Length: 618
Image (cartoon, rainbow, N blue to C red; front, side):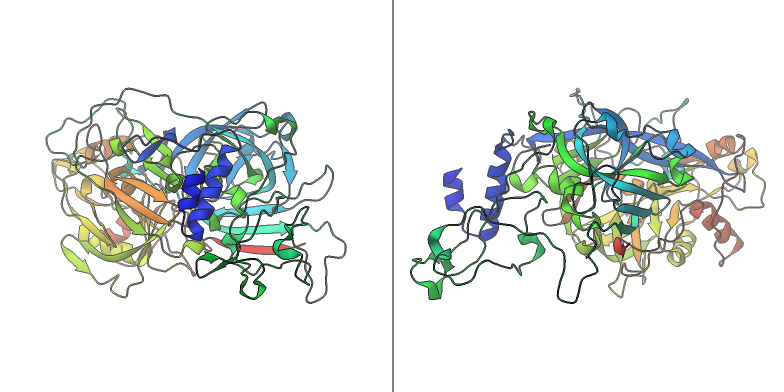
């Protein structure tokens, strides 16, 4: 470690090495041999289960929305929960026993008094004593809203058991002569009505514990460090008493726990100057090391792989839509750090540092998502790297830099869009963006653009199925061209007011792309797409928060994705109807309006904002 530290020539390298060494202090090995496939031996893989939920629209159609969730435990002794691992959210949220609505009661609820390691906190990490007022948080999503309070507790992610790998084809998902699994299987995801767990808005209500907090101009309450030791050099020679930092936020310690200042760097021109030469002395901060002092008796136990202490939100209220219909209990956010209230709330920011996974330092904030397309394979989330076994033979990861990371969403630039071979002018002004969101079940597009795509990509079904490679939707990214075929996003078209008859399958059934209409307000670009389940199924997707950036590679599946069938749609439309609210869109031809209504039903509508945080003092 000393040799490696001495070899570091940049300040960022020094900071990385020190954080690397700090992990060894909590009992986790800081070195790990690479497995040779893009991940380290210390990475963590979590199996994701899929729930498909049937929805009957007012027009009698049956579609499905879906969610991918895994398991974790919170507290000591452990309390078990299932959570959606959502790249569009920034917090761990589970229902609390304080939530007494029917929606909360049908899920497992967190019992704070049952956990020996639980600590009630405010948003800044300050401990809240029993009976004292406390901060509250409201989080809005694409569909749904949650309100809750803050906790700090021990969280363990449930690891996947090692299994024999299944023999996989290198097909990209087309239906070229392969057999389709039938008989009681779930409908293909291309037939799903969409929901979005994209975190939209955060409102924090701060409860002041300080009577004098209505302070005068020039004064504020803030955290600071009181030094219990200071080196003679250089502080004994200076007339000032301390230091007020004006550096960027990244120069702060990642934790809110009290720490000790270990030193400053006296650097000029890359060389260490003699301390006697005070004119040339630099107070450039070189490194921070924080020693954690546990407030919890159980926190001194040996750290387990997959476990960490982190902050979370326990919900005291949850909207019925969509939480009452889903099997999962809560949400684990995988968004960028700025989507969280503070770094200790963010799993990707803190997981590697806290020893939940380990390995090469540049992979600690990296994770990969693989979504299965059949019951012959398993969906997986890998933390601390990615698995090359989920990539098609010969594929390399193509990286795209994240744009506007301060908004917190995994957002990338879209250079152009081509539909059915026709290059569209929609992105010619250079403002097109795409948010990659594991909590959204469809491909999301701005509503005005959606009508145009439906008209251009409408085509006749082939032998009653919406499959094949053409007409395709091509999305040009910075370093990658994404191609979505009818086999990825196609579904049979249904125009409201027309009767569905079985013989229609033998006449001229048509197919359209299954889209979710979503219009994001500023500061997000109004020309923002949402890359949901169809994209994550076709492309193995790697997220790297260190840069930040997103990588894509064609996914390797055991068998191709099953195409949507007109005949199966007819059968499912005869199931008992359950009325669901449906968002109406006007304009276009009658066929286009019907297709758009079917495609956009239950989208959750328009997001109030994208990743903004609004603070109210009470």
